[in-house]
Length: 194
Length: 194
DNA sequence: ACCTGAACACCGTTCAAGT
DNA sequence: ACCTGAACACCGTTCAAGT
Image (tube, rainbow over all chains, first blue to last red; front, top):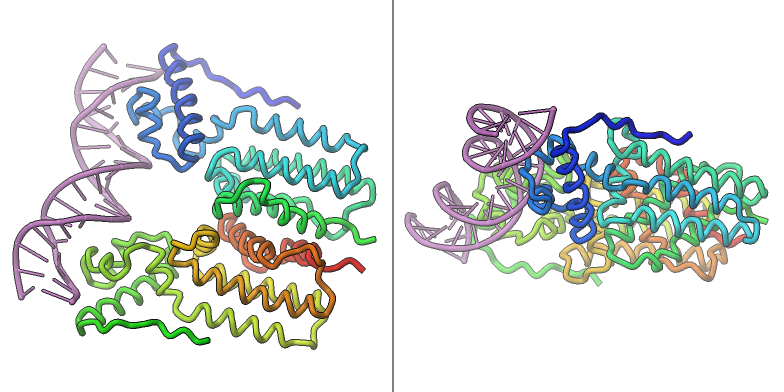
């Protein structure tokens, strides 16, 4: 079920401005994080602040659009992982968690934005969070199908935990690969004890 | 080694103002979270903004002082837990994690402040973070002494993880007791498999 | 030695005026 | 229909003037 966003026709100049803002925002988010000044984004894009707000009512709306095909990437990744049978469940889970974490820390400050959106259907990022949750569920289900996952753990909690680890990486300021020990603990807590 | 803070003598009015600011800050942090307006705190305390900055150069300095005997409470808690032998290691660990989490979410926004301070010795909260880490180490060591903890997990990582879960609670906006499933996963990931 | 509060910089957000 | 940019509110931070 590919969901094509309903694009209402914009006037040519509006379409151009929208695009310029998105490019500027992506650059600014990359350089300064997702909490950067929106005034700055508007200046970079060469538009007035009002124009930015006209196109994107909130920072979350802007981030959501900047994310672009972020959801598709995660979904594809999940399908790849769910289909793999060359890896032992414990290795597959750990690699999946690392992949998930890297998706979530795409911008500094993105992880906390995701966390805040997770339980809030009004948040513009809610849909992306749900997609992340579904992707995670798919991988967990595939590993569970091989009898490797405890019955009493919920994919939702795993998703929260991994996003939480991403947030630790973000806040503490360590590298993504330094999250491995934490992800191993989560992995081992999810795995069925033999 | 009780560390008595070296208090340099303040003029009577300065001492009073300092105290008024601390009370106001504690109230404001409780009502609005640790990221509340410092201008508001100064107004509540009935002092000018300059007076607040004279006493507390940064928000973290203020939070550190507002925390008061927070460190002592955690340390005492850790000693109690480390001494308990009436509980199975798995139950003790889970309860300890819950206690730790409750300490960390004392104010909304406190958990992220802690995370940011964890690896930054320049941060005024660094000392409190270290104390939290040491307290956690003590409990982990006691459980490890009973042979219940994996050799390859480090107390530092556990501390980061639990603080991370606290941050998830804070950001997602769930209740502390709803963190139980996540803490169980962490607990099971830390426990030695029998 | 300490306090005050005006002043400045910066940011988010709105909206009247313009095309 | 859309854009501009001035205007407002708010917050953090500094500092000259005062006691």
